Image (cartoon, rainbow, N blue to C red; front, top):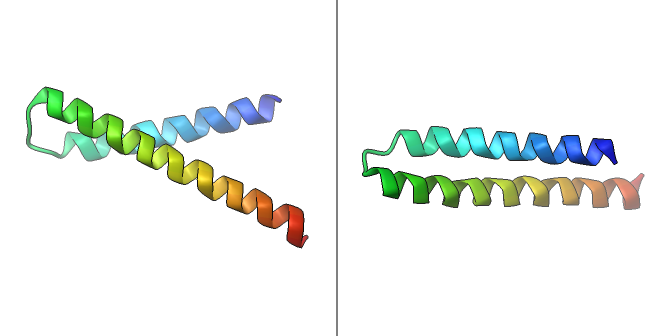
Length: 63
């Protein structure tokens, strides 16, 4: 169970840092930057979790 929690924290950290870097480069007002950050954060988190689910599926069925 600890591995799952650590993995989720890593996914959230990577998504948060990447979204912050993307949002920081935009020349817009602060509320818009916050909305951009939230949008990119959830997009990146979803992509990472989907990628890990596909890798897990492939490992279970093809190894």
